[in-house]
Length: 482
Ligand code: 5AD
Ligand code: SF4
Image (tube, rainbow, N blue to C red):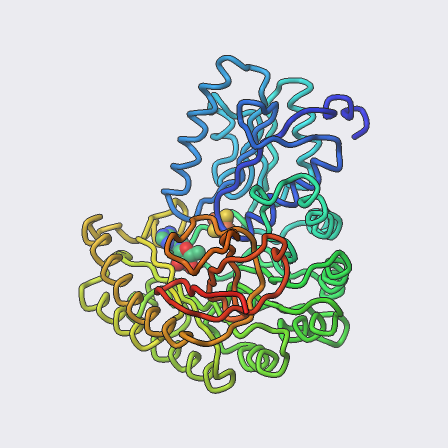
């Protein structure tokens, strides 16, 4: 608290973030909380008094990247022993005190403990002692005090984060694009898909009260936010009982649609389940603000592997959901996730996945090689018996199948005009894009999540624009401002 204030003043914090959008949101909240309590920020590790790494545990590769980063920091600390290094997020929760044993690490803070972050950092700066804050019994329902502390933190910094972002960072280092915000609707996950570490690091599902979510979106709209993305591990299973009424995601989307200033609403990630599926599609079809985009991971097209993954549907049922989505919302764009090389995946199982990808006609797919995660059902019971080379081959083959579909779908935009929300400067310049006329290359997204690259004034970041599409590639549309 106040006793530490002098410790914080003028101290420079560098934050590095790995992982998903949930993690990006946590990073923004942490940065906002640290800013509020007197810290300043730097993009240069060499200038930092405090380095925080927000980590991901979903695949081994993500953890290895963090460990190699920690190796680098250990090196820097040899000359700067006062520097405080903190690991936050999923890996902090998974490895706990083991991480504190690492020579570079002074502070370990799990996802549920981020409301304590400013005090933990100040404490470590003050006394040089290791700090550990993680949940002990992660699979139990979190205590009420913890949920309340997170709710308070989220409500306060969830709306401040954006304002602070624009004050702290120049455009390049922003976590969120201008005019956009992420709002968590639920934490944790109850599904226990056999490959997944999330329930073991983020704990059981806890849904936020709809009133708090709506209040947060209203405040964001007041600060000029035009697009809100609702976040949850299985966001379509959002459920909140209040008195006689049970609210589902469709109710939240409907209430959020009534907020002036909010123009686009998105939500990720959905689980292929029939529960609440119809109302969600109905609100998408009925509200012009709810973007016609669905991220619905299938993971595999083999019913045998789906059972082993503990996913509660068959490939046929999954395809039925897609059909329903397309009949209710004809121009819907759908994205998928797949894992290749799950234990005992035969060539025949893999071909079932190829077949599903061909039929699903995704806008794009995220494809991952199976990575055993300690403590998960698959890791305990099944041998990781698909050779790395086979995983790699299947990954490449599936990507090629999807690329063909993506290409066909993109080409349908040729010559058409699309409306995009402009994110900002394009990170990797596309050399052969339309005539520049001295203007920088910008990137935006359509309501259906297509990436659009065009030249225009940087002041368009955070605004809507109309672009006529002149050329397409599988994942990007190129055009000119109209
Ligand atoms: N190995 C590989 N990919 C995984 N995913 C989750 N756990 C694993 C794992 N152990 C993928 C799933 C999920 C996405 C976020 O990451 O496809 O949808
Ligand atoms: Fe990574 Fe999953 Fe944690 Fe997100 S929730 S940071 S994807 S392990």
